[in-house]
Length: 238
Length: 357
Image (cartoon, rainbow over all chains, first blue to last red; front, side):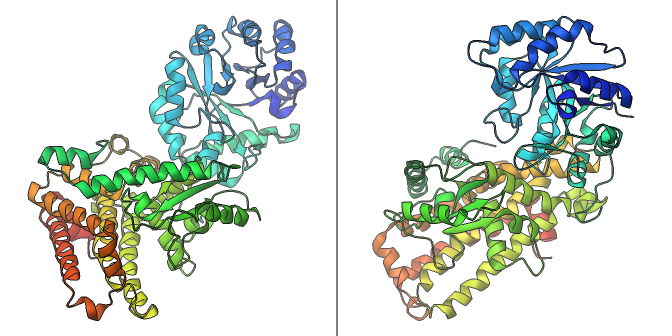
């Protein structure tokens, strides 16, 4: 059975401790600690030694999606706290200012494919350029972003075909036309089904869907459905 | 694929097709000029809408008589301002370019939902089919934002392939890999163009008959031929993506979509050129095809001759020496196509299997 977890930012924006508690209560074993806003990074790094993450079999960290000018070195210093513990770091490629400074993170750095708001890192061809600058980096495939770029998932298939060996984590959510994350719907589940056979069973799936605590397990089940291989159903057949 | 199969062919044959080359160069210059006009003010395109051209500019066959066929292709939230944007585009292009033709298919808005969702059935109007097939066979983004265009291309192809039960099931159809649903629609489009040609003769009282006849024999027929070749390429020259996708149904659709998208980004002459190179078509046939097409573009670029053809109706054409030349060019091109489709070993089998029924 596929292992599914949640991003703390989806459950409790800006309050990772609360999100950790929610996931522990729900018995979810995978977690992505979110520091999507730069202001969240230092508190998370400082809290790490005291944070009880023993119930989680997989822990990753989402780096800030935007880094203020002149502070990149500082951000890297905080991120090193997690790298030292062997925690994967998910990064938006457009947040990076100096690629050479990020190379030392090596394969613990997971480059995420971008959504339509961004001008880089959205397609296989654009990711090629990123990986040429970060040759050891891994991939965090965001299925919601990939679907927003191409709802047929053929671009996602191309990304997996080209960079599947780098795949270390998935993000899974529905991304609407405003580029906001939503709970998984039938159309998203059907779309993700199309590429499920290209994703290894043991690849961690991290949900980025904003749900209430009582909806966590249902959303985890939907994520498993989305990545379960099923026979191709014609349009109009549920 | 070769980056420029047409150039490669000229080098290989030791010849030059001057009017094809000139038209391609002009098309590039016009595209740059149009892009400059469209980007001189506030942005008109976005991630949700692409400015797309069709016709001779999209085919890279720009001549002095070309008109500018464009549409604002929308794939996003409905916005009442879309019409204002389309009118702004029209106004910015009205000085210096011949406006789109009379059918109303170009020079305004096109919506992805209709194009992608209405394939066949009552709601698939002539206009909808035309926009969809031309997007696949004869289109190019002239704005800066191709996002909507790329999504719509993928969406169209996905529709054709997901619902092509002949590819997805086992047996001969799966082995031959020709996307029949797509091929049928391309054939339907060709026949529709031919029928519409007769209809226009009636509607327009014979006005412009000879020029339309020339275009039907040449550029319209070319896009039909390259549409067939595109479908046949899935069987005859599958990309590595397709070759690797041997297992599982899920692989098939996306691998076909990614393979076919490559063709949608090529001009019809590039697709034809690539096919003649890949399938080792005899040089004589290549010459017939490309030399006649070169003469066709020479005619279109000659303002005096073009004017004669524009004013020539069916009756007068029968004794007009210029139209006699038009016929010869058309016959030569057809001869080349006949040999390509019926005498090239691998293509012949597929033409027999899929070309009529």
